[in-house]
Image (cartoon, rainbow over all chains, first blue to last red; front, side):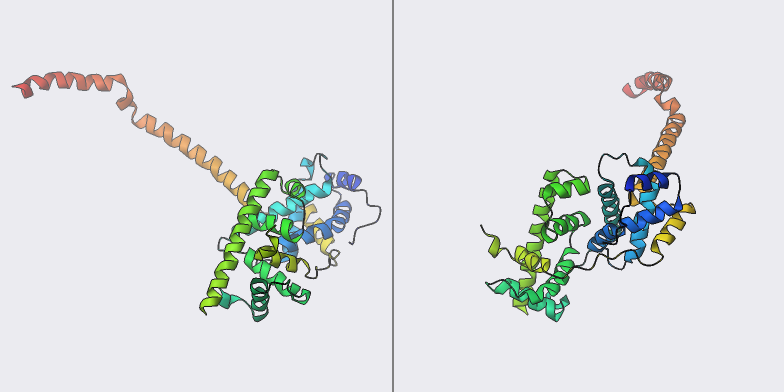
Length: 197
Length: 99
């Protein structure tokens, strides 16, 4: 994980509030694995992950005084990271519409296997499936992308997602339901296009 | 349970097996760069929400100023004296039209 052994986050945070640069550096090193994981999961297209991670850390430091210790510091940082990623995703107004012809050969093979084989596809196709899922998710709103990634890909619980995003559990469930319906519709449309080819 | 027929869930199950990227430690110099930027007093770029907040406040001020200006310009229209003048005028012309 790259975590610093024995780093006392509370002490470090208190020093950051006193504008101690060494403490800030230690905190960045400690939190980097957590932040970069969120950034990679929600990275908008054409955006550098390091730039986005840097922006998140700047926000964390700028708002450090507002952290009251009601939730673990890592959860608070996660929320800052998630909301920054969502802001960036929202800034990308255009959402692509994928056609069968837009899929790579391997993505098309995976989709074909998923749509037409009764059995589960072979695990060797997992990486291509991951690419395909990322592509399909770009058609969703940033909030829907977030819910689907956490719920269906990272297998987080609804309660955990609610804690991470600040949304109610009902809202998480409603968003998941709508997003899955959109994704199923997408898959149906791709299948129709393939049949008409 | 209809899960095996759900193509999205089938695709998601397969995608979950994809190799995860390593959770790297910060690249060399990254933490130093971030800490230096922060210590240098650089603030993060404003979010869309912050920008919206600023514009909302400005539009509130502009709307307030416009309201005051409109009230000032149309003061005589809204005062009772204005309607009284027209009542007098009506009283003067009514007999002429009635003829």
